[in-house]
Length: 358
Image (tube, rainbow, N blue to C red; front, side, top):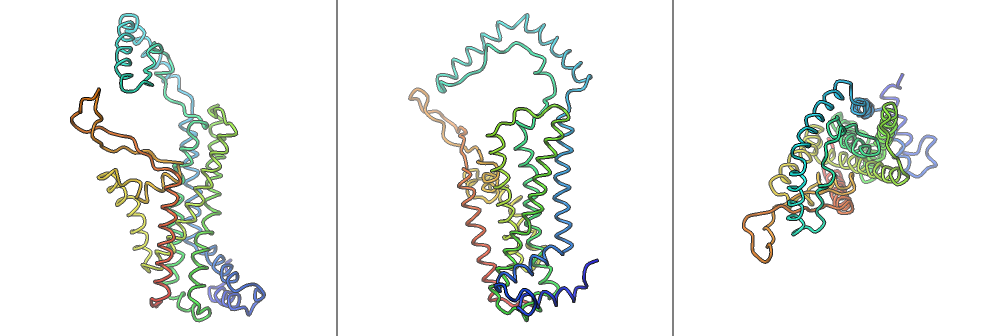
């Protein structure tokens, strides 16, 4: 059973003010330990951590279902489609190859590296079978899929950690024991950032390990090289860094807006709606949106398309608009996220220092 709330608060006060056993440690370290204990004991934090584990299990279950080999019915359907394709190929194959080579030659006028694989057009059975993803090919995508949910949970943890104390009046009481607001703010933001690392890391480890087991059962692991594991390791580390940043941002918005509904609505709504709609209407602004920067950081880069005037062909200007590929680098995304985090945490500190608590 948990200790009574009054007992916990009294112990926290003794620890933070140096009247208990922790008096020998630095004041800031004592505050962080107190806040870490509060973060760990919060029911909302535990439920959000449980949701992180559930999300990982859902991904593992989807991997298990997707990695299954084709059923006998699927193989029979594929063989039937292959028979029809082979009959058509016997009749029209030469014409298809000729048309392919003509189109390839035309494409090479503007793109010398164009390769349409015209010598590899004959129908094969694997082209008609359902795709069986492997861990080697799809693993990073599976990790990326669960990461988006995990960082939203980290953001929610940071928000509720702060707004619950503001709403209950506990923060005002706490300031009577520890009146230095700067230290209180720093300790809460630090714990909000660090506290989400354990459940996020556990969920990511469960995702990777569970996906490996699920793929192994269906012989769909693929070739996992040292480079593959290194890249996946860096991806996981970037996910942990993003979770910590979102936890700190959630705490900062909690201090700014003083309402869980307002902070969650603003943060998640901005990521999913404002950035999404803005990037959809004006793709050129994608590098400067939080959502795109977050994806670029997590996925090691992001590709998007913009409309540009068509380039002249053989010196002749072309009418209309064409599409061009653009990228957002991982470094760009990380730097923008870092700037946003620093700005919001600074604004939260300013609001807490100068605003009323009750």
